[in-house]
Image 1 (cartoon, rainbow, N blue to C red):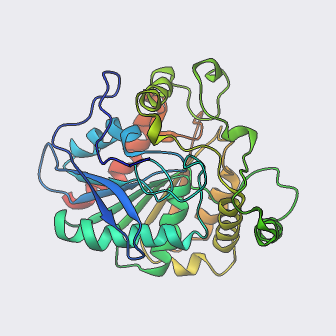
Image 2 (image 1 turned 30 degrees about the vertical axis):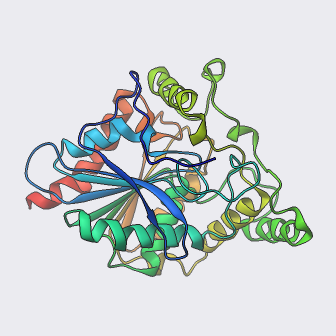
Length: 320
């Protein structure tokens, strides 16, 4: 299926005005869809680089993009390789696949050098959710000069209730990959696709309107859907989480970081976020009461707390 850079614009999720959507190629030749927006109010405060979770797309964050723009930020975002409107390599196209998380690092590094630096005003702030937040952490550990500050929502650092350690599970999944099963699908029950009937008790958000909005976007653009991850993706994710949870990782972070976690998050481990937050020399964390996994898709009261934290940590920096 041919991928398009066009952004889905539907009545329940209107596209913010002023978008420029196109493709760029990573340093290893993968074609990724991206979009950038100029600020809509106030003095220039720089650019928010917004990176998403697994299966997520640029369109899901239209409301949040408008929130950042109204605060004086330009916004730049892209779809990771293997999902959304970007190039895919897994059989069946919809299966979420990557051989190693370092490939996501190449996505972000290439976006920074080829799109952010030439086309977007500085300073640059990295905002990430879930899987994107994990990639953000390994990225700033490698290059502390890319972003001035990092704001993370529900970073994917670990999962609750695992039968073995992250490192042991990574080794097990890597063995399956070596046995030729890397392209087979793997998914936890919590990863099942969202449906209207599944809103009650869902792990993502307590806000029905925002929950349905994402479903309606994918109904309008089924070509943007990403299904279950592959065993290869799971092996890479587990190995990367194991690396981030090692004792020597926090000292590699020298950029100011704020991590927010949801008190009711059952998708990723909130205790793991708290533990890393306590060990970061240049970072801290906070837990939002009542919040589920998708903090930026939650109800207005919870989103208000998230943006209050964002404003205190990032927006106010340009006013001091």
